[in-house]
Image (cartoon, rainbow, N blue to C red; front, side, top):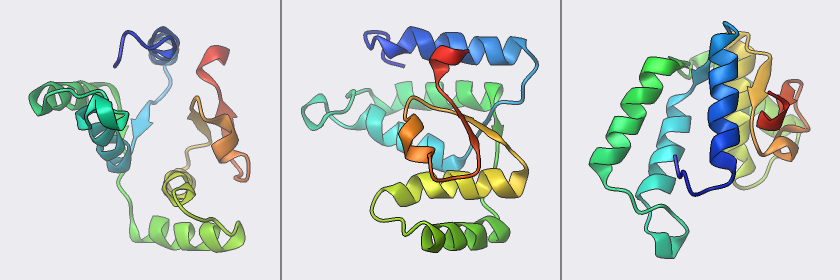
Length: 131
């Protein structure tokens, strides 16, 4: 959402190309929460410093573009299995939650700039530049 970020255009293009290609675009509530944190955190703390009303509008836009995948009891059990299997530590557990939900919901692909964060999992990781 930071148009000053060099990756912004790449991200927008990737989303547009996927949507125009008829792909199902999904997010989890966790994604929205992490987005909220980054957007509302002050610039001094490596955030964007946006007003909450602005971020609410962005999230409403996401909700119109993306299906929301809710965490289920099965996803929780899959998350526990994956963190144990891969000896996940620290903040990597957040990414593991995404993967667990993907597995349970039958989602095979994730588009992310953080390709290396998903290298341990059995999902296809796509960098937005590839789209």
